[in-house]
Length: 387
Image (tube, rainbow, N blue to C red; front, side, top):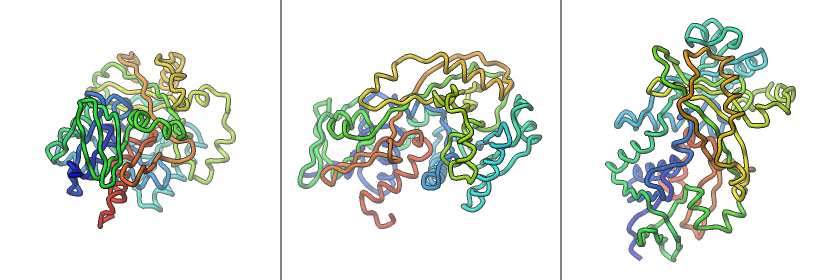
């Protein structure tokens, strides 16, 4: 069989796209096949925060590499990257302690962070309530993107590099042969490649239903909102708050974390719905607020429903008002996103007949971790000399 491509990536979200990007950069002939006319999933339904600071040691390394990759691409082509940094705001002494401990961890691993006093937080973040902010931990190297445009601009840039992009085309069958892989698509095409990488949960389910059913994947539903444009108001970075400090994996590596978590009320609303309060100013001046986490096995994703839980949205707004006095909390848009993750591992990986690689279930790490992780995974799959 004469292979048309070195690799075909199935799934045009951020995880699949960065696998295709690094394959292109390695000199491989690459096709990317996306079932929708444009990506519809978690890649375009998130905050657009690239925050390695919130990740555990393993994934922070991938995230830091992702930062460099995003910035390298942005220097050549505008994919909406803004380096404005991220700050975690502590609301009490326990959270201040966790910030100080994470700052020490970052100092030891060479990741730049800066502790802000209460006065500096109040000075730099307009509208921050003095009865909330006690201290902050700022990460100047972190970035944000506009998720609804970033992936489309990245696809356009990659086409200039030689990517063959097929949108609105579903892969119906994947046959691993003796010397490569053949794909049969909804456009009555047969595509062939040396290797195939499947990075979309829906395609995984279609192509390998039994393997999908036997996986430990779960789906998380996140609710987010966008205010109307805030005239004359400027939020100088992404803002993560006390509930984020109590949730993110990076803080779980702090010495005091276990003791502090044990004192939390396990029956609280925020625990039940996995709420933590985030703020990000979009490029048009509006503020994006959220978010929440509801979970269901992939076999019962319908349990999550298609409606928004207004109790969650109202709680998020109520808590957000305790943190920032924004000019307006009038909401212009509400939505939810779904992403898959694994119960027991940090990402789902499975190889079928040596040449078909399934990579999905990256969870909430997608926007931050995909670029760095995909680089290492492409190196591993193709046994590249610089791996």
